[in-house]
Figure 1: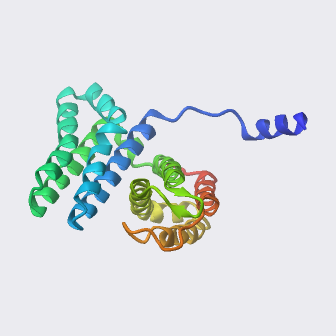
Figure 2 (figure 1 turned 45 degrees about the horizontal axis):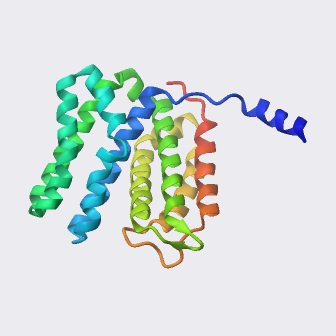
Figure 3 (figure 1 turned 30 degrees about the vertical axis):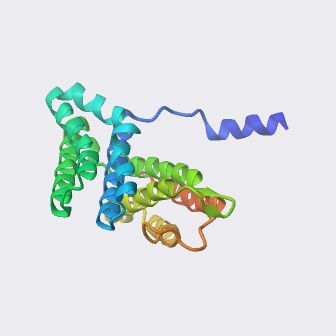
Length: 236
């Protein structure tokens, strides 16, 4: 048995630290996901739930965003930090929907600016980098759903909303890289498309489905997508 374990470890190889640029970009994408579901909940009149998600970018991942930005531009880092605090204040003040959405758009634009300052252009546009960020987001989706799903039911709606938001962001990121991915590895997009379609049925919107997908099924779809991406050897 020990020999089998050691052999498996040898095949898997040592774990490698997450690239700092991937870590930062994934945190930015997670923040965008939280803000997107906050927007959707606020528009739906779910102010209490919107308030929780408005706070998540600062409370859960703020350090992974503010630090790298401040190291390249202290002023921009302060502006990003202030912008990510604004959604919660807007929710608490119950600002008009148009004002709320305009402020969210400005915050997302500032996150995009931060991305261009922190991640070098040759890195951020590469297919390998985009796939690495997507795989990190898939890991986050699995983690959030694991916290939401228990014994056949969605028991933590806030965590389901996080997982739903991550899935929506994952799908958007994938659509952005799919053309280049198809050119590099034509057999990969059909695999990813199949499993994303299955996950789409698990995340129909802010209201969970009546029959939630099991954790085991979600893990299998996430693993299939992640493995398909990991097998691609991009030239750029």
